Amino acid sequence: MARISESQLVLPALYLMSKSDGGVITTSELIRSLTSVMHPTGIDAEILDGRRDTYFSQKVRNLKSHDTLVRKNYATNYGEGFKITALGAAYVETHKNAIDYLLHDEFNYEDVKTAIMDITTRGNNRVIPIEEIVSEGRIVTRNVQSRERSSRLRMIAIEHFTHNNMICCDCCGFNFPDYYGPNYGLDCIEIHHIKPIFQYQGDTFDQLVSNALQNLLPVCPNCHRVIHKNHIGSNNISDFINEMRQRFV
Ligand SMILES: [Zn+2]
Ligand SMILES: [Zn+2]
Image 1 (tube, rainbow, N blue to C red):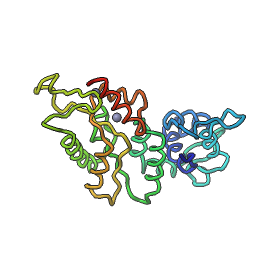
Image 2: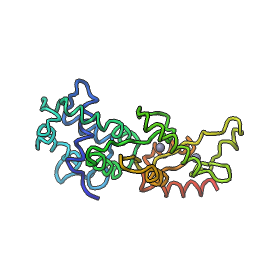
Image 3: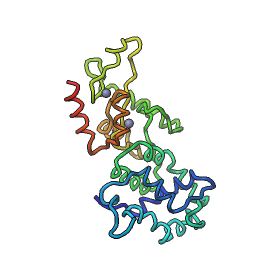
Image 4: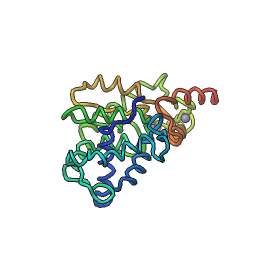
């Protein structure tokens, strides 16, 4: 696992800056907030010899000591931290939906890092997160085009996971219509995203679908909550599923 690079920190740092009062954030707030949304693991979470810093927090500090954000005109130095510039705010806006989705869905640290590189290096291609295919209890994207695509994708996902007219929780086997009856139990299944799913301009819809289906999981709201509460990510989801299947046989 590679350590996080400074360029992978630029967008999330600016995002948090844009969300704070007056676009101002101190370096120590930045360390705290970035740690809590990205939840670094592995080598990045290790403490540096003889210091209180981890590799991760050291990297965040480097944004200041290397002038990374200031040189790009994304922020100005402001006391012990930064103040976002109009250019920085515009940069965040370009990727707003994508970064909102990435930092609020408890994805694996490695998956978040990869996705950040992906969305920031694909040139002008606009990135569309397709979170509406799931019912996570919120809708982030306000893009009409992607919403239409997403509801189509949700239908495809539901169809894909439906067998013998039944769609059950992949973890505990819960089946809504069985329990609540056919009048109330339909369409209550939730779909969890194992890895972040994006559509890039240039991807065909078929490419999006095949990528999406591998990373989606039909789950009941209880299992869904347990998955998120315990930060079960792409590297341990199959262990969780196997364990639950044994419990609920
Ligand atoms: Zn379940
Ligand atoms: Zn989920």
